[in-house]
Image 1 (tube, protein in one colour):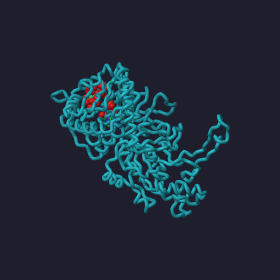
Image 2 (tube, helix red, strand yellow; image 1 turned 45 degrees about the vertical axis):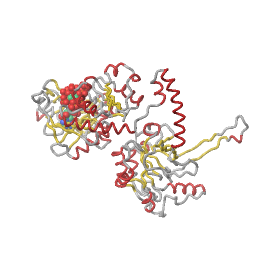
Image 3 (cartoon, helix red, strand yellow; image 1 turned 30 degrees about the vertical axis):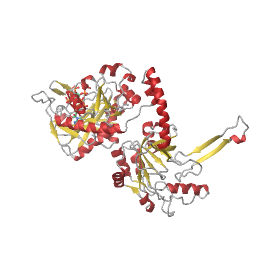
Image 4 (cartoon, helix red, strand yellow; image 1 turned 135 degrees about the horizontal axis):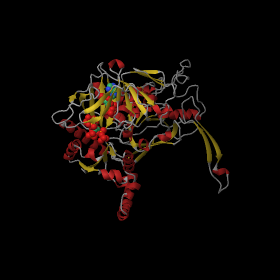
Length: 604
Ligand SMILES: O=P(O)(O)O[C@@H]1[C@@H](OP(=O)(O)O)[C@@H](OP(=O)(O)O)[C@@H](OP(=O)(O)OP(=O)(O)O)[C@H](OP(=O)(O)O)[C@H]1OP(=O)(O)O
Ligand SMILES: Nc1ncnc2c1ncn2[C@@H]1O[C@H](COP(=O)(O)OP(=O)(O)O)[C@@H](O)[C@H]1O
């Protein structure tokens, strides 16, 4: 098997660290990888086009690292990333870091952000033992953290009864990590800060070092605020004890890795004396120092991840591949490419199978019964004008949620991404998983697919790949056809094919129409797919992933609230459970929460 090229892209200080050497020698020893160390001078001074091309990239920011340039490289070459680069930008900003923790449901200290640059008179009142911000009292002791996560001047303000002033933390200087300043009772007013209650942890900090979702090493050390003195062992290393994380903390580690897409990730937990654990800082890429067992586990997990990634390597666009070559080589390669292309076309015709997974859109395409669907005005038809002016032109009035269509996060989430903001890497050529629940849905029109059904399906069909569009086949595509036929015949109701047995008294509280009955996906099932299978989107062959009779649109919230998309009214008949890839192509309507889409799958 060909070796996998793995690029290491970081500052020299980190590349040449003992920890990196520990890891790389273990990876090298597997014989599976060619490791390419990116030179710091190249990272800093050469254009990304000159950087080596690698299949996998371990890149991470530290002081002086040009993160935007690394992101540019990733966009150009599209390697598989151990630690996502765009998410590393979030880690440079404590406000965004806390936002991400909160969105992902990871416990963190309750906090308030004050941008002192835009405080209006009267909004902030400072008193001896508290501050009041927009009417909300924040009692001391509290912690003040600069927005910039690389600024380690975290200050803890004390109540006057305990001596007052502030303990000012800083990066270790020799054996000192903080100083107490008894004169500092006023908070800083020069920028943006995060304020949070000082959590009583018994003077201990927990530092967690995760490698993948399933492994984390944790150490406890004296918190820098205790007395500001760094305890060191005979080798000059800060004294730390390895500790066991609780099940809840292990789950937090899994969630942090996932939420920030950082497979190698250091973060800090405050374990309070009253038994709560919360994440107070996510550092991103970080290694345990001087622990053999950790490096054995880290190398083993990384090997698994890198090998798995190479099964589905991201492809470099053809244009870039040509650009990467010298002219002579390019001409030679061009000829060989043409012959390969001919062969490819032949293979493609012989072996590829394509499916249209949606329905053509017209005035009779079913939509949510509360909205009008599609109206068309024929402006001009080619047959009505003499050539050469003959042409067809039509104008449409369309509800975005008609027929086969995509819901963007903004469909339910204020400030969520709109259709035009969905990224190509979540829409184009992504793995398709089809979960077939048609048997049960045939007899239970109110069925909601559970997490157990999803895992049972995996046992038979294989694990859902990360980044998949997960589609649930209820078999109700047949009803879609029936609905179209009924609309075409001009007999829409009172009951649509989604209403089941009619009961006019049973008005649905959300959509104020007689309650519909069609199957969907439970919110818990959808959450599980987001959190455990990192699906890019959820597709259904009904009007909505929220079963018609269910209330609260909880599945929409679970998916769109996690910044994924939904595809509704698909036709999933005849698709394989696994192995196909799918492209979802909604019209890029700027600012739209929903848009009709062509959806097609290919099995090579
Ligand atoms: O382990 P510690 O407590 O000595 O802390 C480490 C911390 O390690 P961590 O706390 O995360 O285990 C490192 O972070 P890293 O190991 O994740 O790189 C962090 O380096 P940095 O990257 O924040 O610093 P620079 O960006 O490069 O300045 C600092 O390492 P460095 O100074 O060797 O670059 C920090 O060291 P101190 O200045 O001594 O606090
Ligand atoms: N809410 C809090 N309550 C108690 N101690 C805290 C709190 N937040 C941070 N700390 C202490 O401050 C230290 C530094 O805070 P942290 O957010 O990790 O900043 P840094 O990025 O500089 O390490 C932590 O290791 C912990 O000891």
